[in-house]
Length: 544
Image (cartoon, rainbow, N blue to C red; front, side, top):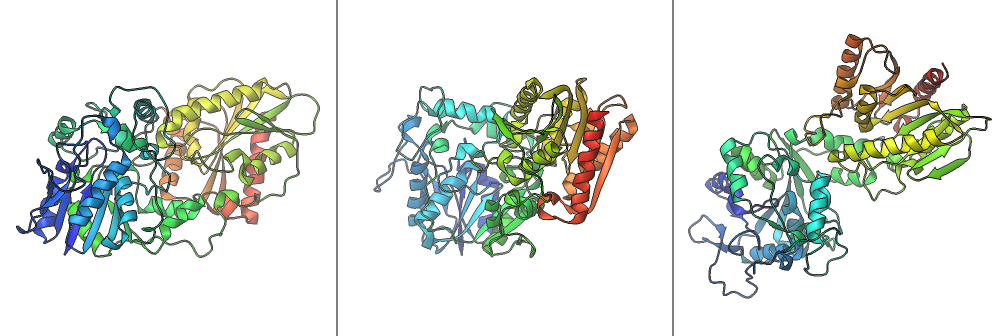
């Protein structure tokens, strides 16, 4: 028999799982929907063992050692409190096979408890949630930057146990974060598929979340690092097995861990709250996960050991002077008088902790030097696209960087090109919708030109497919990878259809055998020729 311990995301409790618990128990499994300390009236206690329908319920007269009631002060409850809750529950369960299921914030205490009781845990299930690392606070996974800032404001007034550096901000009276209001739940994950009555119940029963649970870093010893783990990916929210495969093949090195043999995956065609939108389907996937089923993602045989962003640039480019001005580096040509400039905009989202930052990677340095070697200033800004809700902030960073570039006396401020890579293609929308007269060219390489499926947190303004204008707009140089990820390729085709309908000037540079990031992962003569052609096309439009 398997015992499922079900831990939900912020502002919720065990009541969230009611419709998933029933089919799990009907199939002969034990199910423990957990309400953690501070999230309801009582602490979690395993009961009902003799009746064959175990649950987690409140004990109004706690007598066991370690039982703890919320004293009403949110500052007294933190992540370690919730980890302790789960450890005590695991110790209460007699069934030897315990499967811990973490949804949203709930994955943090799940991993903490597994780290302390690895011998009792048969499997971890990550429900539509990225696996956090040691030292990571749950607030970092909140997609909306406004919400992250609000959590930081509340946390500044919280106490709790020492657990490492906390996020700073304003203050709050009781150290709690208020739950989302009506219409705001999508900021914490897609609500697609949730019936109206279930969403109303979610809004009505939600309770404030102790800020320390979101800001205290997760501390792991590594004791549970080899436990079997299953990811259930809710595709309406933008995740999915195809996305995992893309990250493994072309993302930063930390994503290679997603291809470990212990990892398995399922897609589930709904939003971030499947216990409300697809409870029967979720219960079935949980049973299959416990049985070790699921899809495995593997690292391609030809994959480099080094992470893609650290691979060498495919062209030999000469060293040129490089100057740093705030968030932007200038690669300077050896030339007299002001020169046109190419602003090279890296993709993302990237981790705020990534080192080197994008402008110091061989990729952007290579492109910047290449532009300078041909007589233009190559400008390489860093921007803060750390999550899907960060496009407005990244757009502000880009506008600031362009201002710095145009103000430099060595730059001809009336001859500027913007060159967007990968998901930064969405940032082109502002410039295509209202192009300034000095913008002589917009270039894009393997871009996303509309938000990908499930990217609901991306503001509607960032849709180049809608912003591309008529023939009097800036000319466009678009480089396509023939072996592009299908979701990216679909947006490019939609963009080209719109551009043709409106008469926009688009030159296409095709790389038939190239993959996403071909300059690094496919350093072939075909790829080199494509980079040379694209750069010549951009510089030609700058000089015309």
